[in-house]
Amino acid sequence: MSDITLGGNTPLPDVEEHHEHHHPFLQHHFEDLGQQHEASTLGMWMFLSTEILFFGGILAAYWVYRVLYPEAWAIGAAQQIWWLGAINTIVLIISSLTMALAVRNAQLGRRMGTVYMLIATLFFGSVFLGVKAYEYTKHWQEGLFPGASFHWMEKPDQAPHVQLFMTFYWCLTGMHALHMVIGAGLLLWFIWRAWKGHFGPEYYGPVEIMGLYWHFVDIVWIFLFPFLYLIHEAHHG
Amino acid sequence: MADVTTTDLDHSQHAPHVHVTPMWIYLAVFFALAVGTVLTVAASRYDLGMWNTPIALFIATVKAVLVILYFMHVIHSTRLTWVVVIASFLWLGVLFVLTFADYLTRAWNIY
Image (cartoon, rainbow over all chains, first blue to last red; front, side):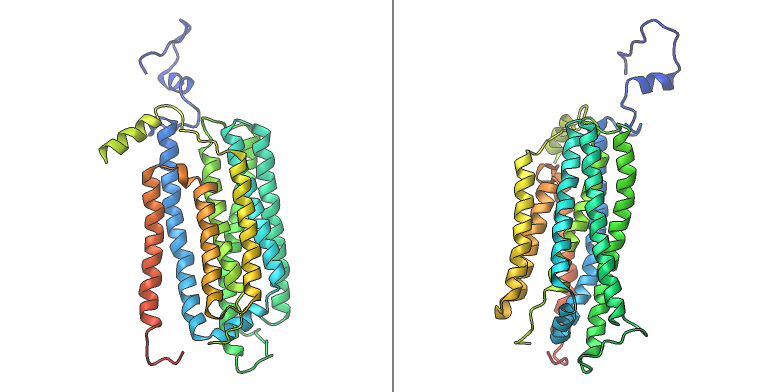
């Protein structure tokens, strides 16, 4: 603070001095960019820990009923097109890779590299949502949406429990897809910011935080895929 | 603890401590995640008796840990971040263990 030199020109107001010698994105309540970066990383992880418990709660209920109704769970999973789920898993993993590379490019000060990798992430995220929309349409037509419209009757004695499985399916994939949509919206904003040249080696924190969110959503899907698409027939159940 | 705090502050006197992960690590993690996905599908094709579910869970957990450590950079994060990450999963463990300790031990249900 004390070594500010203004080159003998017209004295500028205090606020101007402040801005001239500090990074424009350093919030005034932080000592420096490093502290700001650490605080935001910590804060994001705090948020993610609530997210872990949020999805964890639904999954705990899922497991209780899976143990109760193993046959219906296997039948329900068999209603899914497993290879669409597998493709979507790969698509999401690719989007996580491009997201990680966007952070890396920001760290290295590669402006357009960051922009391109964020666009790629948005692209693969959209492919995922497109496939999901196709699956949802198909389930709806097959009467696999729980409630009054549920009319899946291949095994009438299992139908109520299959409906319960589908309730978990829609809740889990629906909440996951909602997170993806929010992530896609954030990506649009970040693409604009990266294009404006906001990020660089000194200030890549926001891209990193965006990445934490995106990778978390990827992790949720890593578990949802085997839980909802790949349940082996419970011969022993 | 005081030592840790001081060290962390020293690290961040000016800009954030940038640790740029080498490209090959990102690609290797991606490759491992893809292989894990293929293994998950392959394992579900076989009847492994009681082992189908634990194997699927194990592969998914390994994939999640890889993402957390390398894509989410926790491996280079401060100890405070480690504490929050580990605590998150501890709480998740409490949620699961206490729920299952109740529902899965009710003798009046027929499993």
